[in-house]
Amino acid sequence: MSEYITTYTGNHFKPTNPDPGLIRIEDIAHALSLICRGNGHVKTFWSVGEHCICCAKEAAARGLSDRMVLACLLHDASECYMSDGTFTV
Image (tube, rainbow, N blue to C red; front, side):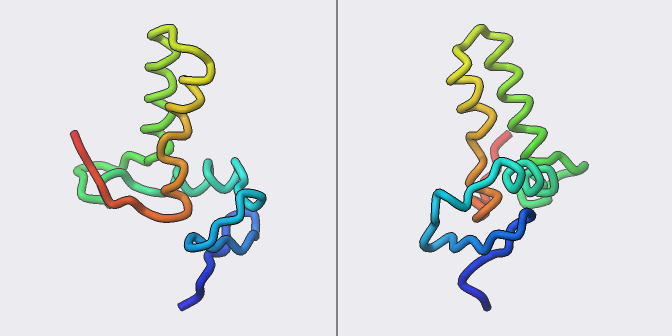
């Protein structure tokens, strides 16, 4: 087993020793669009990426700051590098 993952953009990222310079928004968007919420224990596929977009849209609709909207959009970004395995309804 390798100590790194090869990201969508081709970087070798070590989750146990992360290099912030290797974090790419393209990797985050690509991976989260393919990761299913709830580790797949759902009736229909719903991606983590779509969930993040919904959260950001809700924050914008409530008139929250651009910084808060961005925080909502990226709140699950780490899951593209390591899964958290949590699910709540």
